[in-house]
Amino acid sequence: MPLDEIDYRILACLQGNARISNSDLAQEIGLSPSPCLRRVRDLEKSGAIKGYATLLEPSVVGLPVSVFVQVTLERQVEHALEDFERTVLARPEVMECYLMTGDADYLMRIVVADVTAYEIFLKEHLTRAPGVASINSSFALNQVKYGTALPLPQKSPPKAES
Image (tube, rainbow, N blue to C red; front, side, top):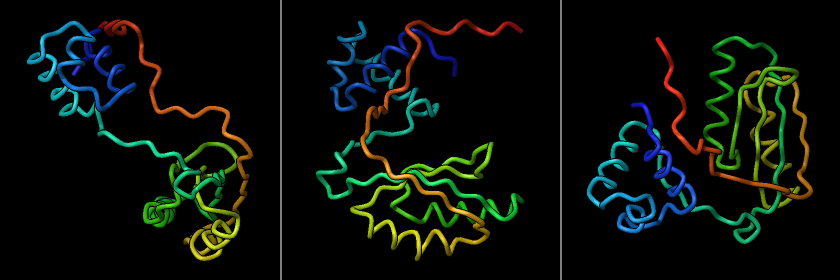
């Protein structure tokens, strides 16, 4: 489904406040409530909106430590990648995990309560993951920027010519 300017305005509003009422959203973007709700539902069905979430402050909920971890596997064959990814998907400490190009095969962001909790995660889970050759951990000292909103275009992107 190609997105138009109104869709981008809806998405921008929802990224800023996912709890906005439909009537307030409609007013904000200049539509009446029924077509606005229909567009939001269409955006959800198309997958443009993946879901809605509540963002928590990690330090308030006892998870103030972020660790960025680079993992290199012994072999980069499909079954080894799948085995490692299954292990990662089962761990709630892993907030993000990316298959990468470059020196390491994976880059992950882990959140834990403290260094001891990370050591336990490392020893009991990450080092035991199948096929792991090396692990490089870096502890974040200060979060300078964190965002969840994608930088959407102000207007609809130009349509591709065929």
